[in-house]
Length: 123
Length: 107
Image (tube, chains in turn orange, green):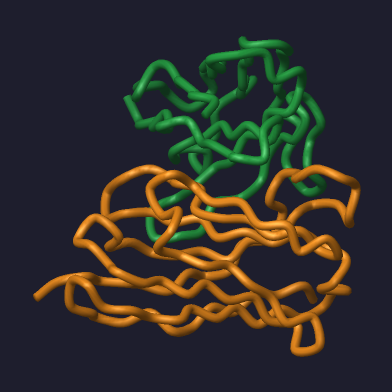
């Protein structure tokens, strides 16, 4: 069964840092681009960042560029999101998501979503 | 960045109704458009990819159409389990974006 399991969410003060992790199983992790999507309380979905499967190319939303870093360890089947200089507006559930098709040169729909991990930024 | 605008923001409908809502891109995105359904407290679920392809396991009452900048999602006969929020997403650009969502409520 294909699964994504996020961890690392916490209550953190403004300006703080966290590292979110996503453990993947049930598919050949290195073959797929992966992304993070977040959802603030009672708000819509916001794409945060994506990373290629084999290329490792990274992309970020303007709202997080320069503060967040996406990475992956294909030997551990794990996706990461390092979040720094956190702001109140970063408070959200962070979802780890898998691209629908293996490396094909562009990003696809997200066919598998994790259950999400909550990041709360508050003093 | 490519902006995605969904309309309406919400709608009320009854079981059995045919429901259609739209998603408009700020520039041509060919057919790089996907639709997701999200129920409260749950992760989103992929319904339609590349504008009109039905994801496996999704009921055939869901259909998508469009290309370029204008897209629609249609539910041919609304069921109780379809009351949810629906999001469109473009994957034309590497800077992926979602629409703001359309909430389908019970009339």
